[in-house]
Length: 214
Ligand SMILES: C[S@@+](CC[C@H](N)C(=O)[O-])C[C@H]1O[C@@H](n2cnc3c(N)ncnc32)[C@H](O)[C@@H]1O
Image (tube, rainbow, N blue to C red; front, top):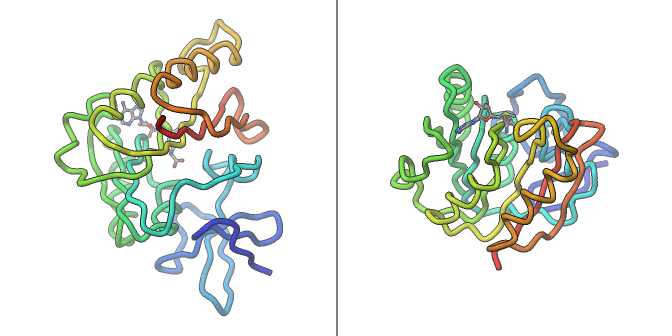
């Protein structure tokens, strides 16, 4: 039995899913075929946003018409689900050329994914390509993860953000909790924290933070 839990986000028992634009797989995910269409199961082992949904994300900031800036899109696993959720544009920033090749192929099949080959640390290199964005999603394995959100917030007026923080990309010698607290404290200058979720057992030493601009 399918149930809509957020606009564009569905549940089949324990599985979360999005309604596929083209009825095809993107990364080998399971498909559920119903009279209402074909749904792609959103794998929490492959996507931190899906892991956060399973771990109890209370609100989903991406709405049916949101424009989304996605930093660290890789080959489009999570970004393709976000593109299923919204009718707005999903700007997918990725700096690795190998991942960009796959991302580009996925974006050819989705009407609203815009691949952007750029460094997420340098928003001035891509702000002319992004008309407007309501939500930021960030998942970059970089040492200065909070700073990347902050520098992008100077160029884009997104109101909400879903930020994945990986402590091991920042420092392997200190405890993850200390690192998470420090990163969140930097963000609290301009954002309020709606929710903070540990992504274990899907991801070790990761949290996902839902931020709203003050
Ligand atoms: C963990 S993967 C992202 C997975 C993806 N979010 C998903 O769920 O499908 C992190 C990605 O961030 C990219 N990345 C790291 N630093 C970056 C930067 N400064 N600018 C753009 N992309 C970056 C990496 O190349 C990698 O593809």
